Structure formats: structure tokens, C-alpha cells
Length: 366
Image 1: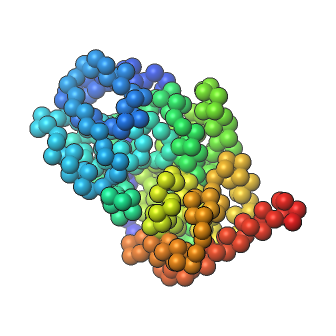
Image 2 (image 1 turned 135 degrees about the horizontal axis):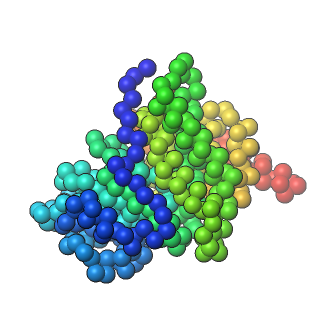
Image 3 (image 1 turned 180 degrees about the vertical axis):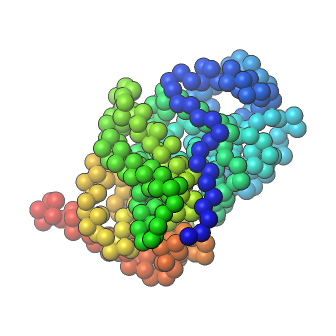
């Protein structure tokens, strides 16, 4: 078996309600002074009260909407020379920019997620897109995030759709890791840890995800909400952190990347596209029995089960070909499944569409 490179966790992690009231005490304890704070408009609105009278000098830069190499260079050039740490505040793309800027500037990175939409707060990598939102590549950094600070009250105030997308993205951890490790004759302990975390991702979110979403609907904190956001952020990140390339991505994320080449899907959240990708991956594996098994869960949470659900209202051969070719580009993770032929993806997409249509007919008694 090839060598695994383990980056299991951030250097420092804390998750508790009211944590951000102690933000500057924590930063001073870790001997930071001048800070670069990268944020978005909505994320800044959530946390600006914690920066109303900062105990440390801060430089604030708003991001431009995509995690791109151009954006990282733009921010790096604006950064003051005396900066000692980079803080990222927001969702996955902002946190990915912060990690990339920290790596580019050789500065420690501090992440404050305002959403639980994926495991970006935990993982030592950034996903890059071009200026039009098309997937380009992901880069794994040599160092893990220095500090991750999660305040559940901040995430409770986020839109429901983002938590649902986070559940969809994190369910994929099990299916993508399972297909890559199922036939391994022996596994190191680190991979056992990764697979345990992946199974936790599936089981906790299937059992408690619906109750967690109710917490946002009712704006009332509950234990399932806490377990779900930590599962998305921490357990989700541990799968790749301890499993390396056996635990990061495979079929479902390649389908996501293929979907980014369809303009109609650009407004669909990352996790929703990945959740759909899980079903296509299972169709590629000839495991429609598993699709049938998890379909009620998808339907309860209104996760996408068809191209129509992610914005492709007119399904054509050309669009599915574009998706399939994008999903099987060189270096795409679907190759880890020994899938390189776009026709395999194409066939699975149409097979899934037919399966979902038949399921709906059966439910409607047609």
C-alpha cells in the first residue's frame, strides 16, 4: 500500500456557544498582533459586533465571490507586511481563500465558519474555480489550519439551505471512501480512523439531520444541531485528514465538478450537487439498491435526486455529454474508481433519471 500523508486536524479547535466573545483573548494568548481578516458581506454582518472594538489591529478585506488563483494573488498583494495571521470568516469559498492566502504568505490561518455547508473549515486544502465558477483544481497544503473556532450560535443563524447542503456533502464521505477502500486487502490504523469517521458522517446525519434542520427552522438550539454541524465540519474533515487520497473525493465530487460546466447549476450549492453526485456514483457502481435505500432520506430533506432538481430544466444529450466529459477530465478523482470513459458517466446519469422517474410513478400510483 502507498504511503499516506496524515494531516488529521487543525492545530487548535474549539466549538462552543459564545466562543467569539473570547476571540481576542485567544488570539493574544497565541501571540498574534496584526491580523488580516478576509470576509464576505453576509458573513461580516454576522460577526462584526465581535470586532466592534478589536483588541488587536485588523486589516479587513472583502472577497470577490470566487476562490480563484487571481483572487488569492489580489488579496496577498494588499496584505500589510507586518501581518502575523490570516483570519477567514464565512463559508467554504472564503475559508478556502483564507487558507490559500495563509499558504501564499506563509502565515498561520485562523478560520471562523459562519455556515456548516462542508468540511472546508477542517481540511488543509482549497478548491479553485475560474472567474466564471467552473472547477479548476484543488491544492492540498503542507500545513494544517492553525486555529478553528466554531460558535454554534453563529451557524444557527444561517440559511437552512446551507446546512442541508452540508448534510448532502458530508453523506458523500462514506460512499466515496467506501468505494476506494472496499477491496483493499489490509488497512493501516489511520485508514480505519478515516472509515470510522466516514461511517459516522453517514449515520449521524441520516439519524439526526432532520432534527438539526428543525433547529434552524425554529431558531432553537438542540443537541442534534450541535452533533450535525460537528459531524459536517470535524468528522467530515477527518475522513480525508486520516485517509489522505483514500478519504478525500472520488465519484460524487467528480460529478459535482462536471456539473459546474452547466451554467444552469451555478446557483446550486456545492453540497446539493455532491449529494446528486452520490446517486450517480452509485448508479456507476450498479448499486441502485442503495439508491433506493437512501432515497427516502433524500426526499425528506429535499436533497436533489435528478438533474431537474439542480436547475437543469431541459435535459439534452449535449448537456449530459458536457457533464460526463467534465467529470472524467484528467486528474479527476473519479479515476480512482477506474472510471475514465465519459460514456460510463453518461449511461449512469440517464439510468438514474429513469430510476427516479419510475420511483415517482410508483409513489403516485401510476
